[in-house]
Image 1 (tube, rainbow, N blue to C red):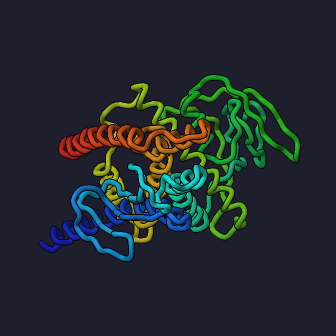
Image 2: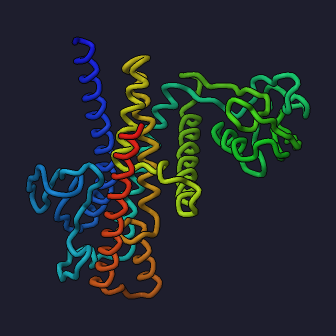
Image 3: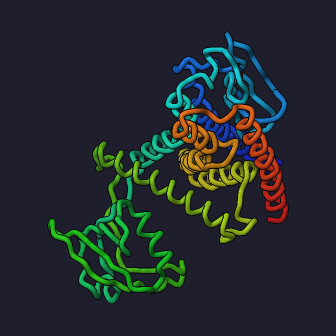
Length: 358
């Protein structure tokens, strides 16, 4: 009986933490729009977290602040955003540069949040470098003369900044010959190496391990540099993932919506909890960084109703020297929003089916 109550309490706490994390990510995004809009003199009519009917709302000054029933987004409603207005504080009456700054601020804040979380994670746990620590005998690395202390700076024609980039490349090239460039005592060494397939991971294997920077060993600049390149890596992965989705390389079962995201956050928390509460929180925060980076990049896609779609219209306006009719742009964004809602229903259904069948 006591064990069942404990498991239910953990499950409830897991869901609560997942919802809280998802809500904070959306809050940071919308706050980016809100802060720059307010700073630029744009009238913000409503600042909302979530979609659908209001759960809680409160008017402070000229802005209505609300929390809505569906934890799958949010918005910052500005005067004149989708309709014409003569008010000088209307969004449409601001310069193109100001409007671009307001729209771009949301995705940018998500990338900033991802960077801050990863910087904390790297500073707290250390990281694996791209400098070789050990070379196993009778392996591809040993056969071409790689040595401990060599730093991998390029692999398969791609510049290497972090360890994750090496893993990604090896997962793609498998056992095909590739060029590797290493730095040894200030000199570049260029070789051709042929990875072997690791039976456990089905990825390319070179036979090397890398040095690590433990907590307290890295300088602030090293931590910031490592964190920045990890965010860049995440951004590239999001773009690659989107391309795989539209080209049909990713199955429907692999696409997760808000419910799926919350489930993933919850699972990472429960997994970490088996070790300690601190590890559980670390897991959740790291996934939060990944999700925040995803949200930032996806919102920059040139799709109507998303920030990227609005940026496209603003860029066109800047090039033409005159805006597209607000009503026409508003209608295009409305159609885009309707299509996104249909997509949201699909991914929600997909999330529910996946949870039920697993």
